[in-house]
Length: 239
Image 1 (spheres, rainbow, N blue to C red):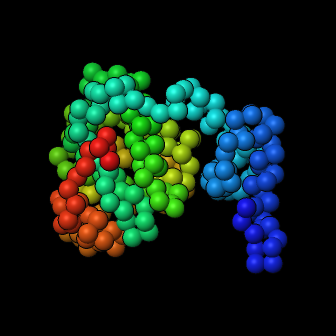
Image 2 (cartoon, rainbow, N blue to C red):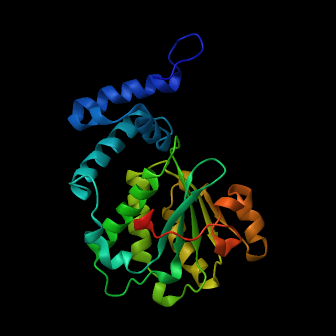
């Protein structure tokens, strides 16, 4: 338990303890949550204890339904993995694991929506599993070649809902590169549904400044080759 220099408990930690008392009374599984997890849910609700407690209880219910075994098998998402659209390798300058999304590889036509939901959970869990004394991850979303066949409003809303409702304060930064004009039309529809905490972490990068902008957050030794770095892209299932 984090304490001040004089040994006293800080104001935020007091809120964590109060929240813990509430959630453990409502759901016995809450006892498995560490303080940092409860703190993330508190921050996502501006340190409002009751709102954060309800938020966390709803998350626990979701988790039991969405991840009944505690993990997602790759056999359960084989069609999504076959698209080769998610990669994970390297760490940014803050030590946060880096994920890369290739938007042009996303093929929503004729997909199984439940499989896509499982895939979204699988990806976030993979990113989180690579954290080393960190609470957040960084993502490069590459939209080069993205067009109508890749457009997926429903999928974007599903991914956003899963991230915001069940993995609060996990996204450290989202760097969006090679942004086509068409995407910005779609973005205007999605943007109002993104909470303020997530909005602050999204950065659209101009093509002319792409490498220099990426290097502000990621060392060249940790940046994928396709962006001027030294690392090869590693498929998410191999990371």
